[in-house]
Length: 268
Ligand SMILES: NC(=O)c1ccc[n+]([C@@H]2O[C@H](COP(=O)([O-])OP(=O)(O)OC[C@H]3O[C@@H](n4cnc5c(N)ncnc54)[C@H](O)[C@@H]3O)[C@@H](O)[C@H]2O)c1
Image (cartoon, rainbow, N blue to C red; front, side, top):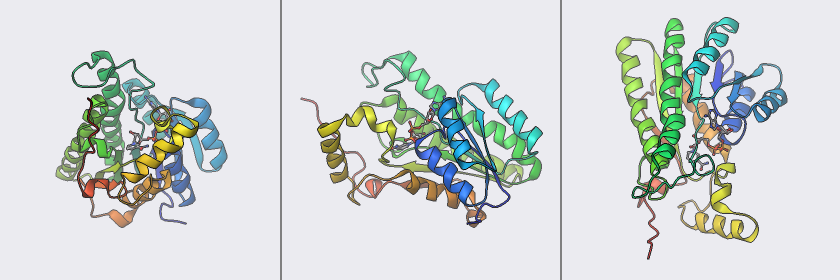
């Protein structure tokens, strides 16, 4: 219950899903948790439910001014930050008009997905480094995806943006090591984790049940993961137990990437 005691953690996109599970687990483990999101209603509800050491800040990760503002507030109120979880991310389906295949992609939609997923992580790393270096310690955890390691024919921008997170994580890890900042940076690569992100793809009712069964059958462990599975991986990388771990990519995917990486459904 105290693997993160006395630590301050900022978690982006934590109004629901994986970010919410990370916020809950980190709080249980003793951290002061700063919930942030563009969904103010959901984010405030999470912070209120946790209570005590938790609070909510609005933060759209694609906007640099908002990062500057939130880090100004953190520095003023707490003076330091131990952990940043760059979790906010979108697949682009409900948020943009698309399409998202490489032959027909809509450039505006492509840019928007990259603005949230890639720019958001790069900005988070930038501001975290500037604050964490003052105390000469910190852990930055970037939520990439298994889609950052394989091609995804119908989600080109998502896959490309997640690949950029995978690579940038290693650059940040090496940069901070070179500078002697004692800031670690690692990426997590979830497979299929059952959250609202899947709602559009899974559909509703009978169709949803069938689609989940199909997904399960394509995962070596036989089932889709839960947000807590990713939160447990984040806890390890956030805690001092991983003090000698930087620049790694930790897959949390039920074994998908252990074998044939891309399951191809062929169009006629
Ligand atoms: N669910 C999966 O199967 C899966 C797999 C691999 C990677 N991931 C990654 O995990 C992360 C969390 O995914 P999830 O499944 O919990 O998704 P989710 O859609 O349930 O939650 C994402 C949260 O991010 C917030 N958000 C969206 N745009 C934002 C912005 N510009 N600034 C700040 N917050 C923003 C949303 O409001 C939401 O609360 C994402 O980066 C996602 O790509 C998820």
